[in-house]
Amino acid sequence: MHAESPQRLLEILADPKSRAIIASVADERKSVSEIADDCDMPLSTSYRRMDTLVESGIVEDALRMKNAGRHEKEYVLRSKEISTGFTVDDTLDIRFSFDATEEEYEDEKVLRVSVPRYLELGEVGRSD
Image 1 (cartoon, helix red, strand yellow):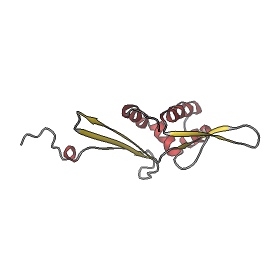
Image 2: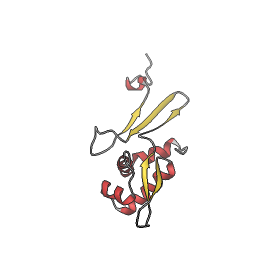
Image 3: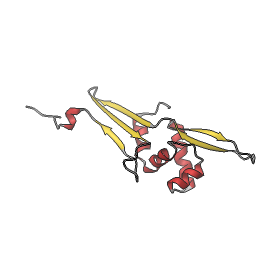
Image 4: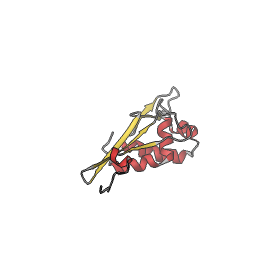
């Protein structure tokens, strides 16, 4: 995967259409027209999102050879789980992950955020 900044990767993963495409190509190679049909989105939108996903290194492309001589690109996910993170003030590590194969939420894929345990317990800024 290219060295995308955490912010750019989060922008891509925050987009529901990009997440739908990622899920669509998680298990099998597909052309953009197959992805557009699978995700119920316009072909032009699928092409734009796919360009972004390939440039970021999340998805890879290859040439699909056809007998009729007309070849087309096909796309597949490079890794089933995409994650990134960053550190705030050299003390706070925040991680984001997205599992393209997770079936827990059928209608929409989930972007998970993990934070240090003390933030979960509400201990930030406590003075006792």
